[in-house]
Length: 556
Image (tube, rainbow, N blue to C red; front, side):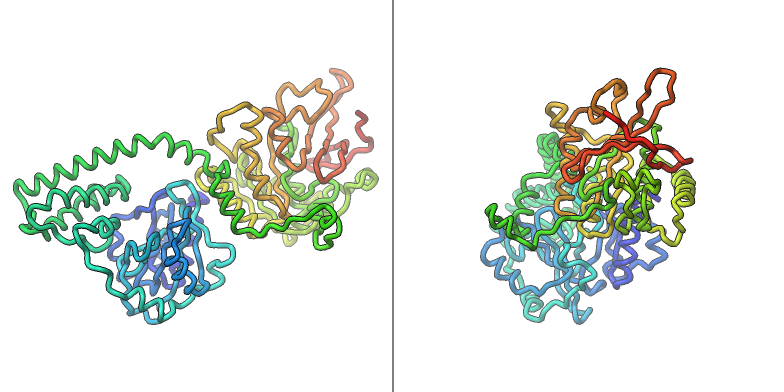
């Protein structure tokens, strides 16, 4: 089972343990991945049934079966009435969506009936009886991942729906009318719109088919939308039950479906461009959201100099790994993956990376700050990682009990939620060191933005720099050196592609080899240059799989 599918199943089991009814969602959609979810409105899956299903996303059934009501706010600009309503809500577990939030509430009495309602307020829907929500860590059709809000996670608890709010949700909605019928037909899973009288059927069937098809995945048009339209037709006057009337209804449905396919085709190029790069590049609305939700303090220079609350961020490994984004560059098979794992083990155990006398003389033998490590070994199999770690641990005098490293040999691409998940881990602060081995494997086939080579490379790493800004952790990213690096005066020119990579990183470290002549044995070196580290070059020597500082410093 792939990492993402396993994660979704784990979340499903967590939600089931809370007494919620869950079912799988198709990846990147809001559609169920099972034939029907209706039976789950009265009886939830058990743990063994959850383990037998494939999970690419998680849906939670709302209403009495889960004792759960979710207030779905899908607007970035709520009006005054909506803001007043939201101000009445107590703090509760909250999910961040692409344009708003899902506020989760328990029902104090699971037998309480709260109907699902579309358009309860402008941009606010109620997910209650007969409804469901897509839950973390599912992927939204836009490519974004549903996540629990940092300040209102599931661990913070789901509040009980206050009585005053419950009473508002139970109020009878205004009667449906032909004039305002569009507001009543947005949700194909909701109550049926009122049947049309004779003379109005053609107009109403066009409205209903257009609204439902526009808001539903094409895979559900025949299995969900068409049966609902037939069901609606039976409520008309006279009812549409067969013959020419039903044939006409079918022709209308097919005509609207063709028109909807054309409409989607017209915007497909725009959607594809957004989806391909949504997780790679920060969009304007994300930056605006962060600017609105994060407190920013400004200083004049004198105030900045006098401000004693600003503290220096200590390096993860003194002399080697400052906080922020660190690039580790080297040609293939030189040993950069071994060095990265050596860093990871040292941080995990709070030990020194290099222990030789020369390392002490060159000020790179201090112990690492101890912390948990995330290692994305995307070009290695688990067996290779294990054997490499065993040899390094032996040479570094590290016991298995001291190791606290989470290893993943598979990871979702940035456009598949991989970057969003990495950002979530950084915000949690769970890991002191995160290692990506390698950058090419992490981005897989993600398309680069148009522009010159420098801009392309800069923009690929820019989201990582943004997510690490102000953090105490280190993100170590391994990438390849250029094949024509030999003979270069500056080892930093060997960075793959252009100088765009090294321009965006906080620190660049390059592993390279030099020879005195063609017959001489190559000597390895590690050169470092960065914003928060003195520029240094360390001579290296291999002790089995372990790197150590050699007895002479490279002289440029």
